[in-house]
Length: 161
Image 1 (cartoon, one colour):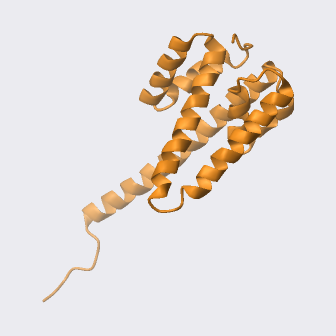
Image 2 (cartoon, rainbow, N blue to C red; image 1 turned 30 degrees about the horizontal axis):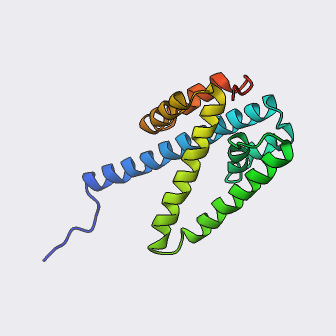
């Protein structure tokens, strides 16, 4: 009995397709990170949070800028405390998410926190709760493309709410 051990054309095709998909995914993730950092940085600068705007450019820790931009507090100190508290909660959930079975629940909690603060950011840009909910739905449907476009438009304007 003779078994063929060399890859055939289909193996090579799907292997190459897998590599292309990985490379395209990494490029899209990098572009998304850069656009998000630009939006958070400029929004923080315009809205009086210039001393924490640099957090927008630090990978993984840029959620601090999102939490600061979405904070419901009015004073700078209150915003920083609120953002720090939610950042610590978020990273605590991130650590717990590596535990089997419990990790699914903590990942859902992390997604809910992120979506809520995206809602708060949209609400502060628009001043309308209905529009903010619609914009969150559009962001989820379009895979964040709506957020990037709308964020690039609104990043140089002060918050309405």
